[in-house]
Length: 194
Image (tube, rainbow, N blue to C red; front, side, top):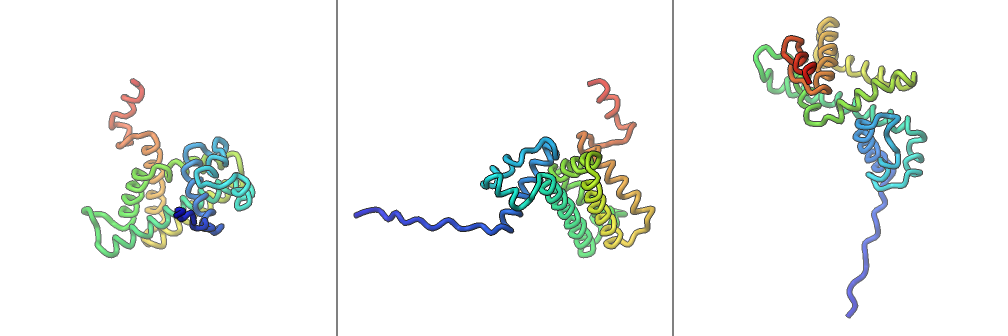
């Protein structure tokens, strides 16, 4: 008696699913290699598609980079919304915490858990210097985050500016691996002694 050699036909993956998988893989690769240092072939291999297929969905590597950057900002926006919703539902988790601070704490936790989000943001800012189109796209994404934080919290412009300035300060501290970025916290002296 012959063994049953029937195999199930391979499931055809819709282009939308492949596109989403490519963007997710691109987030990781571009976070670590930047626009110039990332090979599209590595992203394609991770997803299990041929490089020409990638270019059928994203005409250029720049287009794939911008899609990955956009996804990163979308995830940060979703994080802001979830943190604001959680604050509305359960109130402050720490004394004197307000909704904007709750969003900030959620963001810091997220970049600690998934450093690719932070690294890709930094790569996006770096790519702005070489490409005015990337600069426009990144600026629009950043502006959308500012507008969302304003809408979610209702704080004034001065407080919103301080929040985003502190966020950039925290991004630099996280990238450098420094917990307390204050100049008197000892990191300056220990870094110069290394």
